[in-house]
Length: 217
Image (cartoon, rainbow, N blue to C red):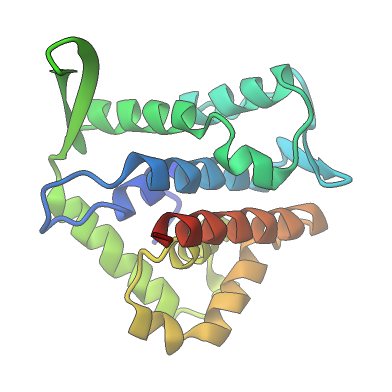
């Protein structure tokens, strides 16, 4: 998989869909995953850095050129300092809504406005390009299982797999068979500099924690 037009958070959002199952993924679960993807990509691009565990903009005037990423960058800049794990969930719905708007514009999703109880406005999303999701899932599984070698992958592709595994989006049997490669992919996802390596592990742990919490009775 090459670094195509879809950002890491957008690809994670699509990967969470089951093309054979009409209902949309749970927004509470999905929001943290999408936010984790956005934080990771901003760190990989050198736009967010780690300062004593705090997510910090590197340059207040820098932009990613992507509405979702730039929106999060602005939110971090305007907010009180927070750790990476806090940012995975803090107002994460804002990032999820922005990603879904992008995917609607790209024809991947369809949005239908509704009213809950006939009063409260709501938006229901349905998958439009099931074949694209199936292809993305197959490519992600190929990245998990190999080849290619982990060293040959981009940091963003490696992060896609690492975060997808943390969010339980890939078959458990395939993940168990590739545990060592998952660790290598996590390292590769942060290979651009020492800072991103720590950040990837922080957000991956946060995603796994939200998944565990949502599974509790």
